[in-house]
Length: 232
Image (cartoon, rainbow, N blue to C red; front, side, top):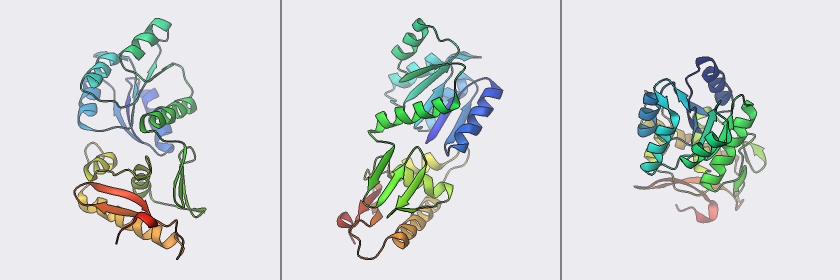
């Protein structure tokens, strides 16, 4: 997942970024309301972790702005302000969940998975043909065999499996894989797709009807398909 972390405490932000990165997520950091506003407007995210007490205002303001413009990105508020009235205000402002500080990093990760599952209609364990993804373990298998992938190829396949079979726009995919100051070009993205196609083909046994491949839909993007649905 690509996550926006809005937290002004430098130490806590560093610990959270390290934990989320270790879990395989890409994290963009914001220590202020202004930075959060800029990042959220120009970059699509799978989820937002939002502190409320920021040096230049309340995190609720950027949340309300996002909801007014129709942005439905799942938001988990992380705040020391944990009275019932404050939790109600946060949820009424458009947050999907609210967790008081101090918190357990494992619980943050679990709540993130739950939010994204609900938003995308997916489960922790999903499959298309012989290709299976265990989101909690962050592991792909094909015909029961582990599919070991470099980070970027893993992220491409993760997006194509969220949920399985959906068409993923090339721009959306590039944005998810790019850093804020490092754009992923079309040639690089196509190279990742090409390598994934080759690996899926190599691990699929000849004659198995459950073979999975990546189809290019011109003008639309990419989608995973089983052998029965794949064209030439």
